Structure formats: structure tokens, C-alpha cells
Image 1 (cartoon, rainbow, N blue to C red):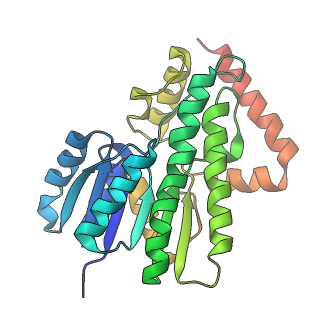
Image 2: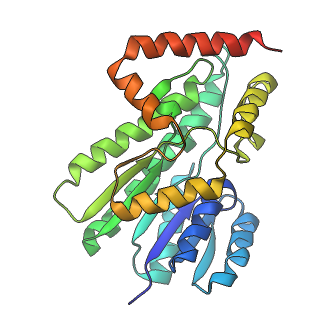
Image 3: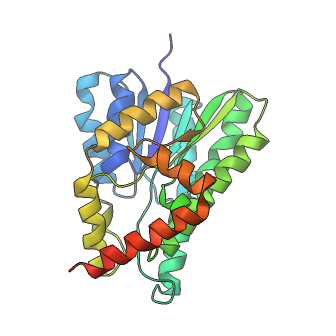
Length: 267
């Protein structure tokens, strides 16, 4: 059988790199795209042990032209793609009043419109070949809307909404859609975050408390993609919290505010 092909943006580190390893381990050809070509190339080098076809691409998902160039490179190399994972993203924290409009634009352009660009570029390819799977990496932040995360949460909520709409538009076709909403687990997301140091420190504490690695999360995502699951909640406890927010929103809100106040009171 011909090897299946997956494109992963943000594959130079963190969850993107872990997903690249996971797909390669299962025999997929992998296109590793990242804003830093050297990191994408590192991912490809580290995947050689799996003996699969892999290539590194430079992409800035915040640029229309860059995403279109990536589309052209993929088609020139493969003539198509089976799974597109829109994973590349950034982090931003701070209150609504404090977060600058530049930070809002930066976050929304990469985390939301970057996903739109990926869908817009590759959906016609999947429609023409009559099959495929679009996987959009959002965040559980898009559901809970915690204080001091407005720009990030709004972007990720937009990705969830986009994915739900896309799923409805593609209903009845052979093209699947998934949206992934993890909570905290260890990554290097804070390295480029635009946030006050106190907010970065809080995020890093939550990451450190996680019992799941990026590899653990990637393995769950891979499994659920194979199952065709739409909403993928790969981190522990999030399914229960999602249900609580859905069925007891006021109770959930009170708990969220109390938790945020408790965090704010700690040094």
C-alpha cells in the first residue's frame, strides 16, 4: 500500500514535533513545516530511524504568501496530502485592558487566521482528491475562557467554531474534520509568549504539574484521528470539565473565578 501523507505545521518543536514522530512511527510520510526551518530540519533528522519519507518546509502561517508557497511545495512533492494538521501557534496573556492591540492582532493572525489559511489552502486539494482529514489544534482555553487569557482564548474559540462549521459543510463527504483541545502539558510555548512574567510563570507551573508529556498527548491525538473523532480532548480531566461547563455553566463560572482568585493571591 502507498504510504499515507501528513502535513504538520509547527513541527519544529513541542506538540508538532511529537506528532511528527508519532505519524512517522506508524509509517506515514511526514512534511514538517515550521517558521524556523532549522527546527523543522532537526525534526526530520531525528525521524530517520523510522525509515519513512520526510521533508522540512519553512512556513509562516501568519502570511498568506508563505502558506500558499507551502501548498505549492507539498503538491510538487506529493501530488496530494491525506491529513493536514494546523498546529502552529503562539501564546498571549494579560487582561483585556492591558493586552495591546498589536498583541491581539499578532495572536489572532497566527492562532486563528493561520488555521483559516491552512484550511483555505488545502481544502480544495482534499475536495479534488475526494478524501482527507483536516485537524485543527485549538485549546481547552477556547472553552473555559479564563481571566487574563482573552486574546489566546478568543483565537482558540474561533478555531473551535471554524472547525464545527467546516464539519457541517463537509457532512456527507469523505473528508473528515477534527479539532483538538488540550489543556496544559509541557511544551516550549512560553518561550515566544507575549505575556507578563507573572502570567508566564503561572502557565509554566501548570505545565510542570501535568502527568502527560507531548508524546503522550500526540499518541492520543493520533489514535483519535484514526477513529475519526471530531472533538479530541487529549489531556486528563478535560472531558469532565467540558461537561461541567456545558451542563452547569454558572457553577463552572464560580469555580473558575475562585480558582483564578486563589492563583492571584499566591506569590
